[in-house]
Every structure is written in C-alpha cells, then in structure tokens.
Image 1 (cartoon, rainbow, N blue to C red):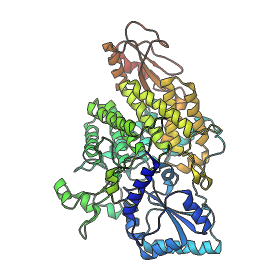
Image 2: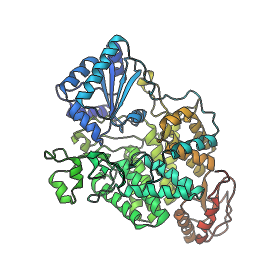
Image 3: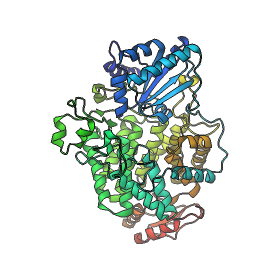
Image 4: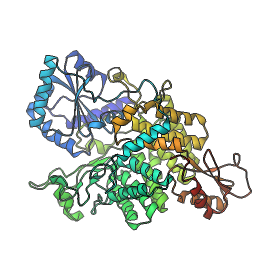
Length: 615
C-alpha cells in the first residue's frame, strides 16, 4: 500500500474531529517539535486511547473550553497521539495513563506530566502557571521523565535479578483478594503477572502462591457483565470501599480488548487447575462478548467499547446504564460506541488467550477462532520481509467519532512483532503445524534486522525516525520481556543457538535495577522471561511417524499437561532414535525422561520436571 493512501485516510479521519475553533492539534512528527523550538513554545502532548472514559471527558469538557483553546493555541504546540496505534509512544508515557498530559520545553525536555483528566477550572491554572514560568525561565526538567535506552547492559546476575523482581511483585500482592494492589481486581497489566504467579506456584509446588493465583483468577468473575458478557476493566470485592461513582456496579465500566484476553487467560488457567464450572462459564462469557460485539467481519477484533452511550437522558449515569438487567432495556438508551481500530498486538494477545482456552477445555471452536484471526493477520498485515503492520485503515474507523485521529504508519513496531510471534508459537504448540513456526521464525528475523541493537542488545520500541534526534530512543522493559520469552521459546523449537543469546542479551540490555524499580508492578512479561532463562524450558518431543495414531495421542497427552514452560512439538528422528513406534521424550538441558510410548504416562513423567534445584 502506498504511503499516500495511508496519509489520505489519516487526514480523512482527522477531518471528522476538527472544527474551526478547535485546538490546532498536530501529529507526533519532527515538524511539530521543530515548530515548538523555532517559536519558543511549550509542547503539550496528549496521549490516550479511545476506550478511556477519562480521555473522553477531557476531550469533551476541557479541550472544547474557549479559555483552554485560546491559551493552548497561543502559547503551546499541541500534539496528540493514540496510544494503541503508536504503541511505542503509548508505552513511553504509560506511567501517566490515561489520558497522559505531558508538558515539555521547546527542546523537548519534559517539565511536567499529569495523570488523568482535568476539568477547565483545574487545567487553566496549570496552563497559566507553565506560561508564566516559561517566560521567566523557571521551568526545570522533570525527574520522572521516561527513561531512554541504557547505554550498557546490566551486570547483575540473572538469578539475582529474577529474585529481586519476584520480591518487587510480591510486595504488592493482595493476600486477601488476590491480584495486585489494595482492592480492584483485573486491569490491563494483570494478565502477565497472573501467568507469572501460576508459573512460580507450579514450578515450586507452592500452595500459598497457588491459592493467591486462584483468588486472582476468581476475581475476574466478579467483573463479568451478565447481560452482554465480557468483563469490565476492574471490579471491587464486596467488603472494599468503592468510589461513589462506581458504588452500584462495584466495577469500572470500560470494556477493553486486552482486559478480555486477560480474563480469558485467568479463566483458562483457573479451569485447568480446578475443573470448576464457573471458569468454564467465564470463558464462554468472554467468547460471547467478543464474538457478538467486538469481532470484525474478517474475524479480527476491535479495540475498545466506551463507558456509556453518547446521549444518555439527563440524570442517568453510565453506572445506571450498565446496571440495567436486560438487553432490551439497554438498547432503549443506545449502545456505547466501539473503537473499530484493529491492532495487531492486541489481537495477538486474544489469539494466545483463545489457545489457552482450547488447551484447558478441548473446545475446537476456541482453537478455530485463534486460527482464523491469525490467518487474517498474516494475509492482510504481514509484509514480504517479515514484519507486520500494527494497524490498517478501515471503513468503520472512518465513520467513528474518535477522540483523536487514527494515524497508521507503515513501519515496524516492537509490540506487534513480538506479540504476534508469541501467538504463532502458541498455535504451533497446540497444533504441531510447521507453518506457524516458520512464520514466527520469519517475524523474529525481521525484528532482528529492523529493531535490534546489535551493539548493546535489546530491541527499540520502533524503528528510529527523524524525531529520534529530539526524543531519545527507548527500549521498553515489558515489550523486551515479551521479546526475550519469544526468542527463548523459538530457540528451543528451532535449535538456533543465536536465539538463546538474543533472549539473554535482551534481558541484560534493559534490566537496569533503576528501570525495574521504576516500572513497579508493570513487570510481568519481564518476570516471565527471567523465569524462563533461569529455570529452563520443559520440552515435550513426539518422535516417529506423525501419521501413526499413537503419535497424536502422545501429543494430546502433552497438551493436557499444565506446564507453563512447556514447548511441545513433533520431531523427526535424529536427536532421538526411531523406535519403530512413536515415543515422547520430555527433556530440559539437564535431564530427559525415559521414552514414553503410553500416553497415560506423560503426566507422571512430566511431574519430575516440576521443581528446579534452585528456587
């Protein structure tokens, strides 16, 4: 697709949101930063997402206020960014999400960052104070500015780094309710932390961690919408004091695609561990919502649903709306709008969640959904040289009343590369089909060519563009954690030793203690990567004639084993002998099982790999 078409679509979408007296918003591009410097203006950067109620309130009430418009247009260069279409910028400012409002000097030095929405009465004094201080030369750098790529790898031993990160995550564990933090269960960052908790509980057969992980899975059940299915972004336990605006619902009524995949993951692992029907029903509720409301005609998934319909009657709140108990009652007042943008990284997380649901239940429909979504991403977005587009324009997006224009960019970003690669490996794990592994390998090679720092290690969030001269490139901790896990698993599958080195070098490149501390609880993916490289994989290899009935029986037996480090595949004789009848070998770098020909023995042999020597 030609860049001119992409630009035309971006302009068309942007034109819907601009009126004659609006703030003169600009895109994240060098010309905007150059304009700020040439005119000695402060930079105002607004970063948010479509499914964010606080973003919508600020857009509707604050950025339409005449005083705010006049102050911003006269004294600031205003830049707006969609955090999902530009995952590199969204991650950079995620500490202040959402909306994140960032102020910078004309040379792009950050001086202030604000988390959440501000009403005009609060926002105008902030703007005036910044203007006065800028004119007086009194603005100073913000010590909480986003970190840039480290110039040298971390020297900390990986086991010590892992143990420190475990302790950091455990300090915020809620032992009463599960989850992390004081009360709310769910959230966009909970999925990776929960997988990490289950991994540790399983490896060390730790009942306390197992109980906390199960509580965390159960917490998502309280966030289910009983009318349409799906989960809200977070819920509150019954005995926790809830902010007044959420009191009736006891939940934050935003529905985002990442929270759906987190909940599906929580329910899939919870069911695998307990066989409790409530988790089976939870998966069905997520599937119902995704299929009925968020699935695009091509089988991919939209991004978000807003918190309330556009024209609620006076006196009716969004909470009142979501408390309505039937589909008919809700439809009387309208349906909250959807963000029809389709993001590759978010769809990849949905694929991985559906794969886990299939592993837990054997429901072929879950697997087919994952396959259909992956096929469409490969067909429409995968480029000839192996990198994949984060988003594409579509007719539905053009019709959306968006908070900010969807700017599509034809260049690699780290987040879609590593998440889609991981999703493809998940599909290879449950199907044994080589096409998924081959495509994942091509994606891995493309990311190395375009995003990898061969001098220091680690991956940049995006291919550095002309703005890199103004804003230092960044290697985000969590996305690099996903990358390290992806390359580590790919090493086991392909036996390409360079991938193992890349996984470890990536961890060291971004794992500075100061960065890990700074990220706090948003470290689940990085923690998972550290667990993998320090505790090693568990490889289930089915060797022999794949057409033999017992080969698939052994494969399915391996599929049924709960082992978060599992790498499962068919393998031609070579490393292991051809015994004339299919056999499974379960191995890690230190030991191997006996050849297993009886599928009923697979789980018993796998249990020997549960507890590494060092915890």
